[in-house]
Each structure stands twice: as C-alpha cells, then as structure tokens.
Amino acid sequence: MAQPRYVIALIKHETNTFSPIPTPLSAFGHGHGPYFGDAAKDAFAGSATPFAAYLDIAAREGARAVTPVAAESWPSSACSRQTFEILMEPLEQAVAEGCDAIFLDLHGAMVIEDCMDAEGEILRRLRAVAPKVPIAVTFDYHTNLSPETVALADVITGYKTYPHVDMYEAGQQAGEILVGMLKGKLRPVMVHQWLPIVSAIMRHAPEDGPSGAIIDHARAMENSGKVLAATLLPGFAHADTPYTGLAAVVIADGLRDPETARRTATEVAGEMMGIAHERRAEYVYHPTPLKDAVGRAKLLGAANPSGPVLLIDHCDNCGSGGTQDVMAVVEEILLQQLEDIAIAPIRDPDAVQKMIAAGVGNNVTLQLGGKTDMPSIGLAGKPLTVTGRVRTITDGEITFRGPMYTGLKSHLGPTAVLDTGRALIVVTSLHHEPFDLVIFRHCGIEPTKKRYLMLKSRIHYRAGFKPIASHIVECHGAGVTNADLSVYRYTRLQRPSYPLDPL
Image 1 (tube, rainbow, N blue to C red):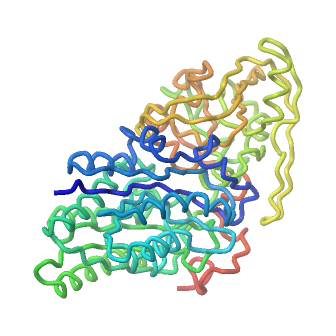
Image 2 (tube, rainbow, N blue to C red):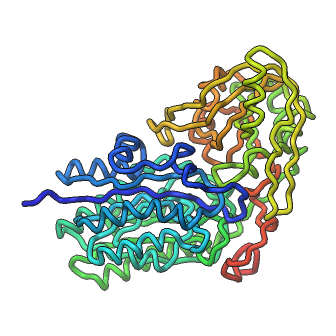
Image 3 (tube, helix red, strand yellow):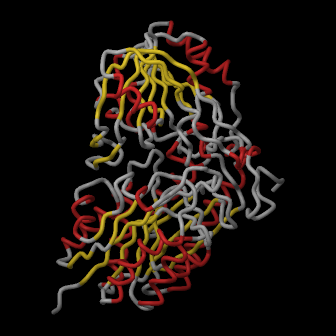
C-alpha cells in the first residue's frame, strides 16, 4: 500500500479593514516572512497550534506530511492580491501533485484587497485542483464565516477558548474527524447557522458574556456523543464584510443515517444560536471614562495588593489590528502619577533607534508613539513627550513559555526600555500583543514585582498575566480596535446588524 500523502498548510490573517497598518509579505512570520516547505514544518512542529496537531496525526497514521506554506501575520489591513498569490502558489502546487487529504490551519477573517472572503477563495481554488480530496479546516475563534466556505470544506472546527489556549486541541479535533472519514468509520454531516450580531470582542471571552453558556452547551453535546463537533464562532467586528457576524458550525456522523445526522446537527446549532440571540445585549460593550478607570486603578494599587494591578489599553491592540502607538492611556497614567508601573509594548521603531544611539544608562527625550494616523475613524497620531534613562536594549527575539503559543519563537524587532522614574516603558520596533510574561522578562523586568502593569491587549493578556494579577482595570482609550462599534463607518456589513440596528 502506498504511503498516504497529507498536505498541511497554515495561512492566517485577521484583517481589520479599518486599520492603517499595511500587510506586506514580510508581515507573515510576524516580521520575518512566511515559511515554505520543510521550514514550515520545523517552525511549528511541537507547538501548541492546529498545524502541529496535524503533523502529529500524520506521523501517527504513517502519512507523509507535505507542508508547502506556514504564514501568519499580526492583524492589520487587507493584504494585496500579489501577497496572497505568493502564499497560494506552493499550496496549490502541492495539492496538484496529488494527496489523500488536506489539513488547513486558517484564521477565518482574512480579507484581500479585492476579495472579502479569503478563506472561501483558498478552498475554492483547492477544490478546482482536487475536487474530491477531503479537506479539514481549523478556524480562529474570531471567524466571519461565509456559506461558501462551509460548502467547500468537509470538516470545520474552531477554538473554544479566549485567550486561545486550545488551538492544538481544535486542530486535533478536526484532524481526527477527517482521518475517521478517510478510514470509512464516519461520514461528517456539517450544518452552519449565522446571525447578524456584530459582537464586541471585549465581550467574547467565555467568562464575560453569552459565549460561555453556548460553549458549555457545545461541549456537552460533543461529550454526550450526540455530535462529533460543535463550534461557536463569535466573529470579528473590525472586518467590514458581508459575512461579519456570529456563527455556529455543528458536525454529526451520518455514516448510517445522513438525514438524522443533519436534523441533529441543525437542532444543536439552533440551540447554540438561540442562546446568542436571547442574550445578544450582553455582547455590547459599555466603557468607563478613561480618567475614571485610571483613577480606580491607582486606588487599587495604593492598597498594597498581593500582585500587580493590570491596566488594559484595549482600543489599541495590535492583536486586532491596532497601531500600538496611541498614547492616550499612557498619557493619563503619567498625568495621574502612578508609581512603579511597567508598560508594554509601545511600537515606535524611530524611538528605539534614538535610544540605541543614546546608549544604556544615558538620558533621552522622545516624542514617543503617535506616529500613525487612523483616517478610517478620523483620529490623527499624537506623540507624547517623555524623558527618561535608557535602561535596556535587546534584539527582541523571544520564545513563548505559555500557555498560549507555547514553544513558538517570535520577534519584537530591536527593543529598548525607557525608565522615566515612575514608569518602565517597553518600546518595540514591531507589533506584538503582550500575552506572555516574556514580553517583560526578556528585557530584564520582572512583572510579578511591579505594582502596576499597562498592557496593549484586549483578552489574550489573560493567558499569561491574569494568574499574577491582583486586579484588572479596562482602560477605554482610542484606536482602531475600539469596542464602541459606533466609531466605525461600515459599508459592506449586512444590515440590519445588531447592535447597530434593532434585531
């Protein structure tokens, strides 16, 4: 018997169509460019990702794992058609050479400059090359799912956690279902339901809103054996597309009775969407004024807490397409004179170079941040004048310790720490969301010893930082990841969509 051939690929980009940050080819690989061929396998093997789960399944099954491309970028604006074609070419070629199965690690909210549904196009192109080859896809939690994407895939699963600490498990789930299909042990019947609910990402975490109850129900249905997989995809509000909304995908086993399987999957999906519709008001975010939030954090820190107080600058999170150089929250922190605070990260490559030129131990005055205008929301960049001592300079090469992306290496670019006396500010050359303590530790700051930490993040910070925090205060600053959806001018969104319209 010939050795099975599995094509395993990763193409991921969460596109914020309101973001001014470009997405060149070099953005994939988090600043070092995409991986091709064996380099893709080497980069992701053993990591906590769907790609790694697929590799492990291939090894167990004695299959040859062909890895044409692994390309993941921080969220930003739509990538060009040229960039997309460079990523697609090796994938299409690998499939055209023949394979028994295709395993895809995709995002689900990728937009190309001339296509609102990149994942749908990926699947359409692969189906044109190999119309009968089974395809399994693992999607990010923040997927905007099109009907065409569902129709073209055999298996779809997604993460059930936010922060995403179950990426490997979601890939394993999709992969095992596809392998069962290949062996003739099951026949996946997949049902998709969608609601025009544009949910604020700050209300997506299972402990924060309706998603927890929906995911609990999905897990119960899986554990009971009633369905093979049940996935909630709350969507990505910062992508202005016709598919932006909230979805459920349920897979039942139709090997013996396809019609009953479809009815069962439809019933479970309906139950999941029923909870979402009934509790849709909980997906709306209601911010506290910035001055009040920082003032509350200051009081909490003054009470000698057992761990640092976290201040979350969630409107400017690069993990959702933010510029990561909006200084509104930092300015308020300095104005209210919080003591013993570490801030990470501010993206300002020019400021880093000035600190490198000044040298460790020397004083420098910077026009920090505020280098990027955001015309989609009418916000101009506003630098903040800060003076301090250059404390540390690093190359910004880090390895995640977990529980998110455990084992993967990443890149901050040249990085420097400015010590203002009250604050230690980590300034990077590249975008990076702080979800791992390494963001501070790699440059000599021990986050557990600080009274306050300010993080440019939304929810992913909880993976590494929630366990060490005494209190968490969400700070509503400004930027293109604003949880107040009224600041965006949607033109492609299906209307009516809640909460922008009654539903």
